Length: 339
Image (cartoon, rainbow, N blue to C red; front, side):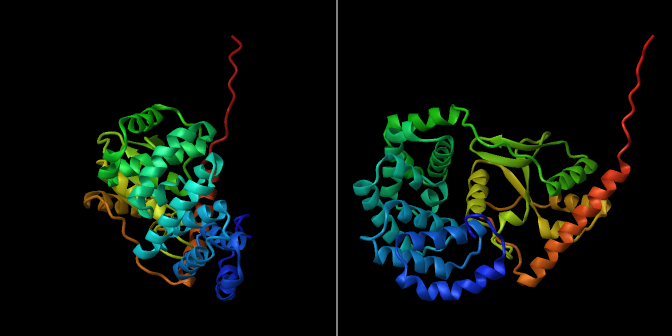
């Protein structure tokens, strides 16, 4: 279910107590599957994810390297590792990578969220140095993650960056100048709605563009350091207002690099309904406030029932906006000049 992105949160929440009870009986692939499924559908039960990591450490001699790497990445992306667990995972992962992993297995350990938030400094150095020797075996997605990892280390952990040799640093500088093929992004209907409101406010902007290794939703043209992010449901863990670790990391890096960021949360936007004047006023007030701090804070806590109701409201608003666009759309006319 998790692999296919089947989103039925009640199913996962109902299964979790039984899965947690059976974890001591699980082995390598089963432990990885549980962690991976929870991360895919963003059901963030940190206690269960931490328990999976502890079971993997207890059974480290029986764990397959690929499974252990995926578990560590999932723990980082769910923010489930206290300092002691992060240190133990880093030490064991260093041993696994050095003794058991060839280039094809190693490349899976290069994840910018794990590199920036979970790995120890020796492991960060090891990963960035070894990747330069295994890059020939990597695909575009691995290059992109390595690029993001290098930026995260350069911005958030400068002492680690300075410990890298000049040749390694130059490798990542050259990597930043390459065009890495990746899937193009397009604005969502929610994004277009915010963009239209900004246009009515008189803010000239561009939509969905890439800056360095990150995508930016909306960038102002008159002041190129001002940007906006439109946070949809997928930017949060399921049925919460808690930002994912990947979003928190991106926000912090861009803020440290000088961007002034403002964010529009989907549930706040949905409450405005289809009233464009109210949306313009909301953005005006948001623009008059200072930009968001570098440490991204979560939204106010809400019950799952409230989040489900907001999702239904969002669908109703999108449906109403679509009907309005269809109603206002003028039929195309074809004029032929035969003279």
